[in-house]
Length: 101
Image (cartoon, one colour):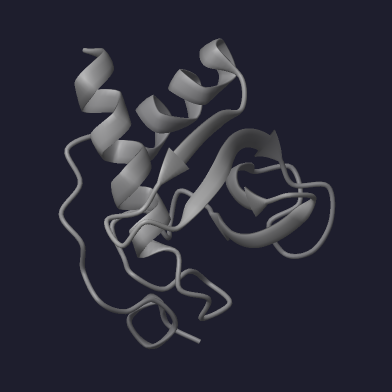
């Protein structure tokens, strides 16, 4: 499956995936809110199974449940590799990084 058919919906982010991942590694899990008021936590992690095993990932959590995750190839798209919507979480994280700078 090509990246074009997997990922979809470009979103404009100011920070690269690596910057966002390092931001979370340094700060730890952070609580954020989407533009529509949905609260979640973002955390940096390493994938331990599947086709992305060993890769850096950013996990988006509500309580103990993972709602979405982003890999480097998914950053900047509304949908991740598994066609899960994650763009609103990426945008909220990207905005939080800009505030910290």
